[in-house]
Image 1 (cartoon, helix red, strand yellow):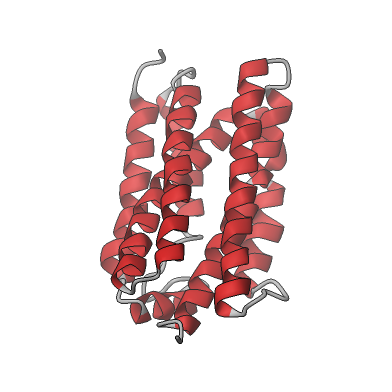
Image 2 (tube, rainbow, N blue to C red):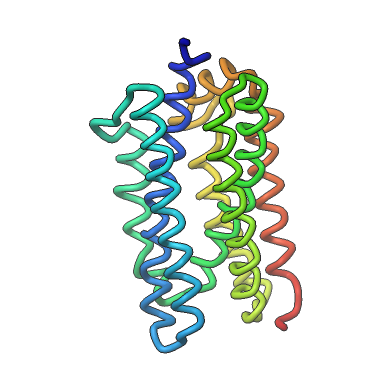
Length: 222
């Protein structure tokens, strides 16, 4: 039986798998910064392992169910993951709150995205894919709580919050899919083919995640 919307699923799942596997650029310097805190190391190591497992599940599904293997990075991969993300590793090591905030933002956005994709998979009766999304969502909710706990250990002033918000806004560009998106316009088309409107789902979800992250940064240290 042909896989419904196969071309669109290939492009969307491939992009998500890359995002999952690249989170180590943020997690690795955090592990170095917290190397003497055993519980933090345990949580962050598990987080990193989860993201690598998610990438493996997605690439496995692409290979087995969609006969697709990503052979080379896209232009967006080259720009964002191989240039911008590695360049901030030093900053994250010196400013761990930046790393925790970025991860918190991504996880908040991810659970909203996976929920939409799971509903689409369910509608198309893609049982294996629906189950895969449920597994990943469960981990992402756990990651949200752990990142929230880390962030609440910090106290920030207004200048620091403005600086962090600027970085979060920059990273939001990575998932922005508006009409004038820098490099996600082709991905925007694939979401539309799946019946997921980037303007009402993707862009609003990323803005909601950004707002939640900013709100948490404003709260007093616990």
